[in-house]
Length: 229
Length: 343
Image (tube, rainbow over all chains, first blue to last red):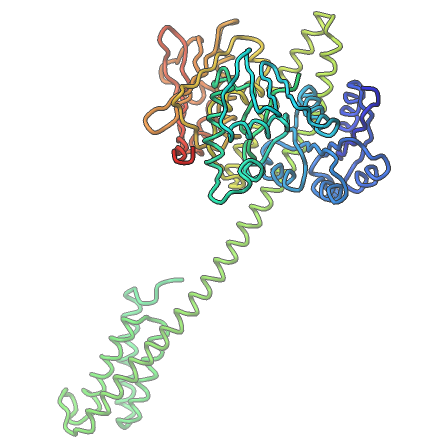
């Protein structure tokens, strides 16, 4: 990475702003800070950051406001710092267009992984082959290799895996999955997705008791958790 | 409001007023038609402070008195003039109608009063719930914010302490205690939210394997300190639970198991179908279940696990494990299996 990515941090707590800025700088990012949604919108306009990290509860103009105002003009990745137990807020933020969230108090390692996943999405065109630890997906030939052997997937299972893996690290709503994989075919429900997802997980997870690729994302849908190699 | 149709006093008062009206009218020598109006007024007042039953009986009694004392021949219930039959019948209909109208009006007034009181009570409840909700939100925010900073700073310190064993030890202890404090706060907030009725459990099909994984993400230090094995039976259905509350249950039970286990001893997490439910077990090699265990024995964690399980339509039991140790057994409702024809 030659040019450092710019991250906008919006949080009303100065201690969190400072410690986050310090950690992100240590990880090679450039940071700008804002104390509420209004400051966030201004800083966004001035600095054109590559990623926005925002708290939800802020005085004057809150995180929902910030997300909505940024989404009106930009597709920049937005990561939400949510509070445990406020699941409805989290889902609302995703609905407004946020891409992902971490729950306070989060570990920096986890936060950095989520930031990387978001930046990957915007940085490069999707390659024709996706490589994860012990899992290779050839998008052109629609083949999946694991441990030197081909995993036989049905066309639906492959489409599911393709959608999840090209969005590795990001939560996907059930509705998004139905829209993309089933083209919103009438009668397609969360249960339909569940059945196919369960079959897919059985085929690609070497130990279904201890998933390494796909996990459910409570009240949202699913998330592909492996990081590309 | 007190019942107006009951009570000996009301009966006596009704009887007394009829007697008094009758006696006064007789003494005053009022003519029969005037007495009819006086009786009607008496019935009206009796209706106001009694009810339908006493009012109706009073109507009948006054009709009889009317006949007995004021229609010839006096002091008999016989009626001489046929026209008096009509007078008496008209009086009876009028007095019963007066009674019914009065009682209906009063009941309507009482109902309105009751509705108003209910609406007021509801408003008070809503207000206190809104207060609780915003208070909980503020507490969650104010407690979580400093913890977030502490977590970030500790992690930074830990990274730089890699080379120094002594410092690393201190930093690990801070990290461990911080996460314990965090889990206590999470627990108490989850309980408070449930109690405040703010968060009703929102169940959805949740694979036990995902719960186990989330437990590991939440207890990195426990999982780093000792082997933890996981196993989910192939035919184990998804649990139909609120995923974040179910996670809280598991985190508490695994933390308890970690506390009582000897260093290096493994903890096992297993899930399987049990009748129509999902059974999740946390197995340890600790000192086992003491006789007569109660919540105090398991500490706050077990109590909270129990409450959260109950809120999810499940239960938690501690049973002795063969070969020593404890099995914390969580029974949870199973999610219905989706139709096969969709597969």
